[in-house]
Image (cartoon, rainbow, N blue to C red; front, side, top):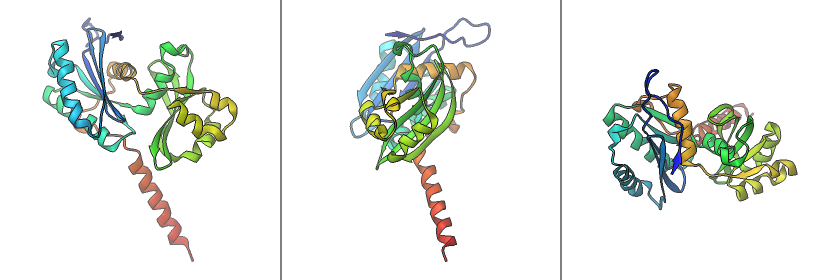
Length: 257
């Protein structure tokens, strides 16, 4: 069981935050519950359908700690990019819990969590600001990629989450010159094989860690970066890029003689 920083519920309050976190963007259902400064985690393979696994997991997690969802101060979810179905599940779950309890929602991007996880305290890279290129396999010879710079829970976005062809990753890495490249180590090293050797050496094998998601969500809650439940949406990324490609194709057709 890990410890996480406590967040006061008000300027004169000493009460700590109770926070629920869910990530179903990939092949695992990952849950975290921050309670009394302690972090309780549940993680299980999702199988072919996240929803069949996630509701019993949530019920068991709350039952083990002897609290109800409506006792949470906020509900956080990994907003993507990732599996379309998985992202919808996480977003729907937190919307339902938040609406039922009148609490806010916090969205944390998966690529930001990968960046923060690559320089987490146990990596020895946590003290100085780092520029991190985070990437995940989007299938179909494509990758979701983003570039963030920062340390701990304080980050700024240099390249927002976007969808690129896998063969574009070496050029992106060369352009941004990250201190760390974060993602599946074997896959990312292969993708960056066309980059210089120094960049390949900066690859750090990283998964989205529910503890990192919780710390990022707590920081956003403390800063007031919260959403009304009805405003919470998944960050699909692929949809936006698909529209852009279609628009460009139409434009090219329009100028042909």
